[in-house]
Amino acid sequence: MVSLRKRSVTIAGHSTSVSLEDTFWDALHEIAAARGVGVGDLVAEIDAARDGNLSSALRVYALDYFRNRSAT
Image 1 (cartoon, rainbow, N blue to C red):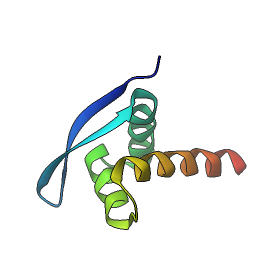
Image 2: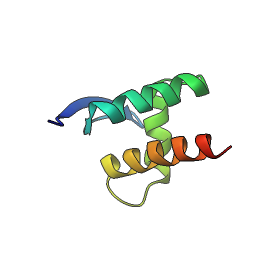
Image 3: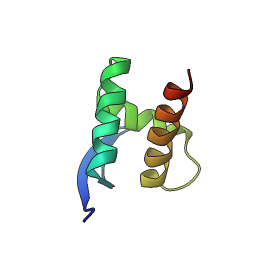
Image 4: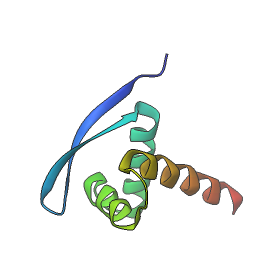
């Protein structure tokens, strides 16, 4: 069973909650580590560029990251 995990992040000085599956939180941690940034910084970057809701934007970002990484 897939469960959502809600975590608090700070974006532009404001705290917000984001619900994602553990797999996506793990992916975001891996991406942030590879880029040498914190997860909060990565989430803020994705937030600044998004059109839809934040949870969806984070999922799409992680999916695109790993698709593009495996294509090279």
